Length: 153
Image 1 (cartoon, rainbow, N blue to C red):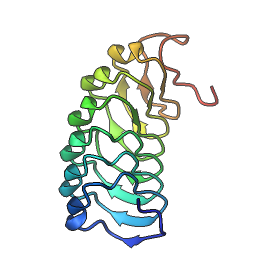
Image 2 (tube, rainbow, N blue to C red; image 1 turned 180 degrees about the horizontal axis):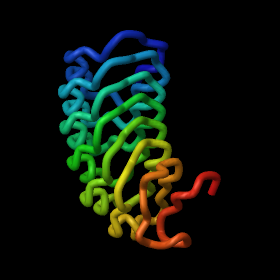
Image 3 (cartoon, rainbow, N blue to C red; image 1 turned 90 degrees about the vertical axis):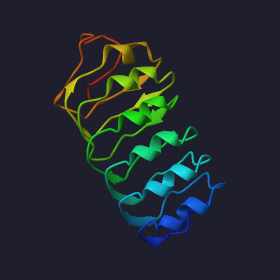
Image 4 (cartoon, rainbow, N blue to C red; image 1 turned 45 degrees about the vertical axis):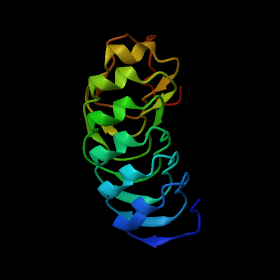
């Protein structure tokens, strides 16, 4: 596990750390390299300064659930809809939520990004879903529907 105040960017050699489960609370900046897809045990990628989009290879990380409090930008890669749970709040992700996210079966937190469009109805069946802090996201489920889009709720 790497929680040491590490600085700099993530090198491509990160793919060699196949047993790595935690990469958080560092000062890592820059984009996530495609080699991240080789870290099949990685569950936490949080509280760094990572920016740029999520690579499509992030969908290979079946253990990954926490990608919070970074500076990740761009749109959601549809491949991460293959995960079972996802906390992706407090980033700068924009664009719509892919319909593939309806396959998520557990807690989902997408709050405080720049998500736009209509909330996928399939996500209404996820036990707990939070997407507050995305003022341009519309929920078809109504104000008391499945996913709470209100701040402070």
